[in-house]
Length: 287
Length: 269
Image (tube, rainbow over all chains, first blue to last red; front, top):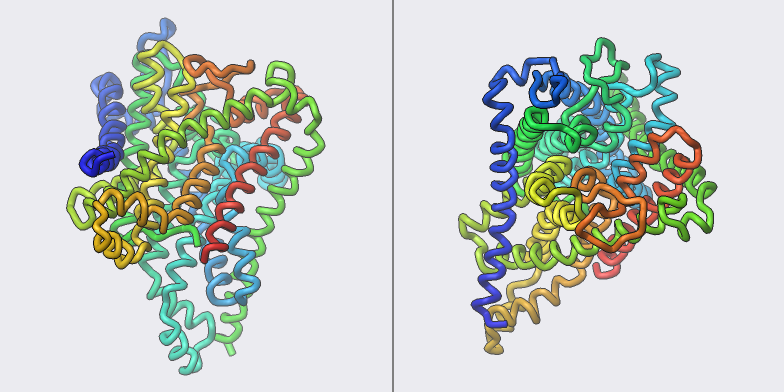
């Protein structure tokens, strides 16, 4: 293979990821046109999702799946953030090398388990527990949020641990020499030093939770209604797509594309903010 | 004394979080092994889904993941080579690097929707090719980033030595730089393979599923993960048992590939 050919092929491969990203945006935008024209901005706040009898038209609004996505993500973030911070503190400041290593691997294996396994386990083992403690029928916002939290903890913990590890030893030692306790060193030296990485990891995990499909599909209940209580079943954008996208017709299909576009654009901005504003350059998750 | 007490509380809580994290891992793996192993019989591997086994599903899932890798690994590696060896420092390269980073975290269901619009809808139905393309789209950004990062670790002196020997740029890349980064790139390929073989969402409405054994990629293609999703929601206990067996096998495959990948890295370092 000549050098020029090799170079051109590598250039084309590199531009491919650009075209895929632009392609996704363009395709979703094009197919969402019908729904955009029909419902406009109100799509975001309308809670009706009803097809006409002839399956050709209907009224479709994204409010319920949008709220379901936001609430399940919010629950997951509230649970996952303190736990992930605790784990990173344990790994970087408390555990000795011989303990930290296997714990690190265990946490990373938790991240490798496919999301469908979380869903299935959650449905048969975790939902009954939520049902016993909080009432409701087991599946719903709370169950989805908790299992979602377990899924994103490893990502958050891995990035936070890596950025906490970059704190110079000298800084910590000086604080200890002043008589600071471990917690004070973590709070006043490590946390401020690793702030960018920590916030970045939280936002990145947020982006992940918003787009998570399979685990939530098992657990959120997949019902098109607003949750009145935290244990009520509802639905989310990815779950609605997973269950109903392929069977939808015309305007309903277009509304699904609209929802996919909303999810894609929101994730795009969240990930961009996390990666380029807080994390600077991509932090490698594996060690 | 108050601050010492606070210190103790925080340290205990942190340790507790780690215990909780590991607790969940063992809880999940424990129930999975308990339910999975007791549901596995010889017929599980010998039969296809239609007869209550997962033979066609395993073959189908691996076929799609391997073909997706065959597509994504060369493209991703070439793109990584461009970013690091040819375009490094240019505006275009850094734009592509950033976009590829974003793609790495894009919701997988949206990739499924995208592939449906381009490769399922116009061709009149679910097909294996669409599933492969969806998986490849998920894999390419991971391979790009691994290649890019691993090539960055190769010392400049190696490239200079190649130049001094009169090697042309692409020969230096292929015969010196790639070889030096081989272990790291292999690990990245293994880890990304482990990730896509467990994917469900991008397959749901691209390749969908098939109860029968088939190697025909132009029609619906059998998938282990999509089957788990379907089987778990059936009310009969035989379907659920099969779902547990399939989940256990899938998890073991994913975790083994992961551990092999990590072991490869450690041996080199």
